[in-house]
Length: 121
Image (cartoon, rainbow, N blue to C red; front, side, top):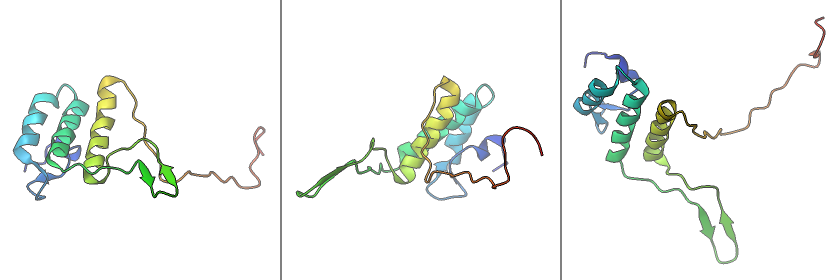
């Protein structure tokens, strides 16, 4: 490996990581797209990596007979879901669209009691 700039945006590469996107595939994608559109190149690499993985389905509804619980939109999980989400994120820069990213926990901003809005002290 030569330490190309696109490697930082690529998924795990094989080599050095077994099971990653083959380096020659990533290099071919980078050669075709990187100069004109780095995000397109990265999206293509992440999509190629996702295509190598087994999809992990997300639970969208649980029915126990006594009760039924529904979750939000089912999205793929695991390594496959992460690869698809990363590809969508890069695509959002190419297409001008947006990708919804979910935070794990809401962040609460706690300001000190002395903080006032308006005049400076």
